[in-house]
Length: 214
Image (cartoon, rainbow, N blue to C red; front, side, top):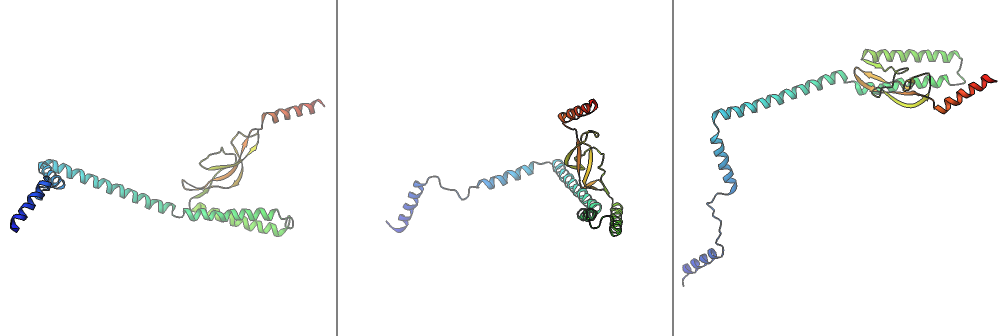
C-alpha cells in the first residue's frame, strides 16, 4: 500500500468518526440574519421608507426643541438666581450685626451710656443699608410675627403657651427668613403659640374663684 492509498484511508476513517462535519461553504446564523434584513429592506415600499424617515426627522426636531427649552430655562435661572448662594451667605452678616447689638445691650458696663447709644445707632444704619441693598436685588424678609405658621416659609423651633393667640400663630422670631423673588433663601426660625393644658386652666380658674371669695 503506497502513501496515497494510506492518506485516502485516513481521510475515510476521519469522515466515518465525525459524520456531522462543518461545511465551510454553509452560511452561519449571522449571515442568515443579514440576508433576512436585506430581504425585509427590499420588501419596504418607497412610501413606507418615506414614512419612517419622516418619523425620524420629527423625533430629531422634538429632541432639539426640548434641548433648546432646557437651555433657555438654565440661562434664565442663571440670570435670575445667579447670586443665590452669595446672598444666602451674606445673611450671616445681618445675623452677626444682630448678635453684636444684643451683646452690647446686655453689657452692664455699657448700659445707659452715650457710647452704647452711638454704637447702636451706627449698627442700625448698617443694618438698614444692607436691607436696602437686598431689596434692590429682590431679596425681601419673610413676615412672621402674628402670622400663621407656614411650613414652606417658617421653621418652628419651640411652642409657647399663649391663650390670647390662635394655636400655631407665630409669636416669636428667633432668626429672620428671606425670599429671593419667588424662591426661599432661608426659612424663618420661629416660636409658635399653643393652648395651655386644661388642668392648668382649671387651676387658674379655681385660683381666681378663691381670690374672689376671700
